[in-house]
Image 1 (cartoon, rainbow, N blue to C red):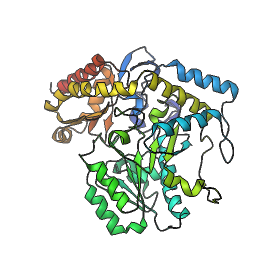
Image 2 (cartoon, rainbow, N blue to C red):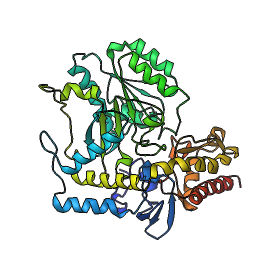
Image 3 (tube, helix red, strand yellow):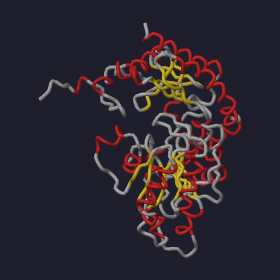
Image 4 (cartoon, rainbow, N blue to C red):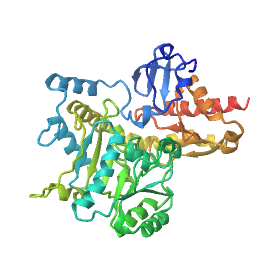
Length: 426
């Protein structure tokens, strides 16, 4: 027996946390306004993350709360299995389908956000091929550096070994290719046999794996590889959807026509959990055509939750009314200009910007190797200076602020990053 005293520690177990350390260093956030959040001591922090990429409309908006309260006063939730539905879910599905670059799409809502939506899309990709009489097409291909949530399919499809290694094999018939090599995808499909490959999952911009923007022409090439081999092309827009890249969807910015899109985060700006899989006509057809007996036997207790959908509608109202997607495009060069000078810092190897309000500041590998605690200390030092960021793959500082952030606040993010970096040099 160890001397561990559980009763002396808080009961909450934080995600992705070393609780031996975190339990005594918790930062309790109690409120937020625009791009700033406040801890229980009243200290403000500029939220350079939009929490976890998702608070697109900013913190403290009353409209989603009011919409949720109004819905809860009528009926807070009711299951959507089989023939049941709700008005908010129907309205949100119509609206999302109309915004997306996939004509005549169907929308399957998930309750927990992106991780549930990834598992839904992965299962649907396999169910589709069985439904049309090609049951051998079951292999799903992901990419290195990719992050697709932490449910079983997403953990297996992701390309971040630290997230999957502790659990061993979870989902079989999953393969990976380099994140930036369309030729590698074509070769992998050829080696496996196209008659065995169901789908290719692709973040238009790699997010949690380090914020990597697609090489010129890459996305068009992998989409064509999928078309040539009759493989479903699935765009994971959990992060990039609803304005993050300066278009409603990154698929619009990069000229993609995916067979499925995975959505979450900006769908509600995090005011309530909600995700979605948007399925194009090809994928939907065997399940929707008149007279079909096919059933996609999948769903969740809180699928299409009416209150979450009501909050989602209010969120989309704000994004449209305040033209926040266009604002992201306007702030794109401002963010790049603010962060660019950091690339010359002795402790920085690269600053990645390129589309919308997404960026990463990579800590130089030699510095990290000399001092393994450097990157984590930088996150703490930045927070102590009033800005919240975090590490991506243990090597890069994330920047993905709310769309309502000001130009001056973007400059503050860069200034604080530099101050923390300079302090490490003494």
